[in-house]
Image 1 (cartoon, rainbow, N blue to C red):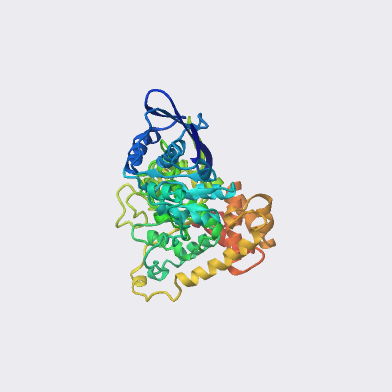
Image 2 (cartoon, rainbow, N blue to C red; image 1 turned 90 degrees about the vertical axis):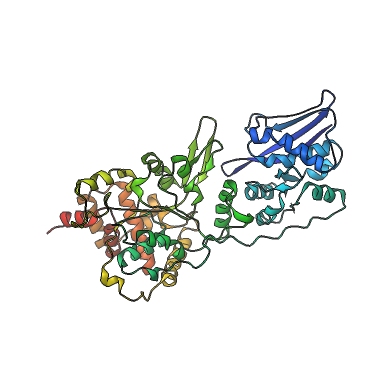
Amino acid sequence: MTARITTVTFSGIDVIEVEVQVSITTGLPALNIVGLADKAVSEARERVRAALTALGLSLPPKRITVNLSPADLAKEGSHFDLPIALGLLAAMGVISEEELLPFIVLGELALDGRISPVTGVLPAAIHAQVSERNILCPKPQGGEAVWAGDLDVLAPHDLLELVNHFKGRQLLNRPQPIKVVQQNTGEMPDLRDIRGQESAKRALEVAAAGSHNLLLCGPPGAGKSMLARRLPGILPPLDAHEALEVSMIHSIAGTLPEGGLMVERPFRDPHHSASMPALIGGGHRVRPGEVSLAHLGVLFLDELPEYNRTALEALRQPLETGRAEIARANAHVSYPARVQLIAAMNPCRCGHLDDAALACSRAPKCAETYRDKISGPLLDRIDLHLDVPPVSPMDLHLPPSSEGTQEVRARVLRARMVQKERYQEKGLRTNAEADGEFLLKISQPDQAGQNLLLEATNKLKLSARGYHRVLRVARTLADLEGCENVKADHIAESLSYRPNMSRKTEQAFAV
């Protein structure tokens, strides 16, 4: 007898249906799994055998073949345990195959029959909703699956509960949506904690309003990390569509705690020893990297020049396109990676380039060597560059600023609402994503602004990418002020955020 159960496998966040075919025929007793299964899937035979024994059942002394179709597609993960077990039960006549046909099944089996959590339940549930199917998943992730829509969700604790449900001896109720996961637990750090650094706070507000990349350069203790860690507090929450999009990636990665739905924008801050697969994604099973786990959120790279240069250069494409394309000999996987990059670095290795009393003996040569670790094309993809000076003793003794995170957040939200209305027909979210003729149309400056931009382009030798980034930042500055048109003041402030503009401007515009 042959039974068929539907499950899925994943290519990035794309879901591919897999049919588990179980055949019991005469022959020498054996249980074989075919269909390009990896080690975790091949080991399912022992977990399934033990789980059925816990139910008081034993496999028939016949030849059992489990085929995972399509057979030429690699199958990975432990979520094939439950569909294989249900296929065996259906082939043995314990439960009805017809009752299982509408379901997509995922779950790992423990040796005592419990159904353990697996990765990818949320994208599988969304696929089930689109294809007008239902889903059967582990109990801890039932609250994750119901966010996909009004599909039927079965989330049993163990195999016995599931068999009793199909036998009519026990009713499994639809799980309740699990409370959303808050990324930032505890009290959110406030911008009032930072003394001085008004220019840096302004740059942080501009970066948040338009989702622009930001590089902070300054000596140790200037407050660069403090500023970066306060950026999530002034960003708007994820909307419903964005929350599902971000949660799908974390579901695939197995970093979605308790099956909840994320509503806070992710903040990822990997250590500078992170490898290229850790940042971009990869490995044997091609898992999402930090740039994808930070999708629609913040990727904070502290001590930027200390990162592996190959890993940093691999960031160029995700920063430009919003996707991480991972090409391997046996797979080509694409993950969303629309991130806001916030980077921090010292001006040189010792960090005290501008302080003769503290600088090392190799200054200023050490600064050139240190900065050379970051390529020009990568720096050109960063919209805002800011030198953060050390905090003066006078600033440290000042009372807290009257304007904190809530006040700045309110202005950022207003600017984001303007951008949402502007781009609703284009499928974009923020000014940082605008490009081409549409960018030139919405960012057309007044006559004084055009003259200033033309002069800056000629004298400062801005690249085409740099020219467009100046316009994007200027558009954000106009949105923060509530101006419909870009003015010369917005162009001037935007130019001031280009790399090393303080020295270049003095030379280029010297009278």
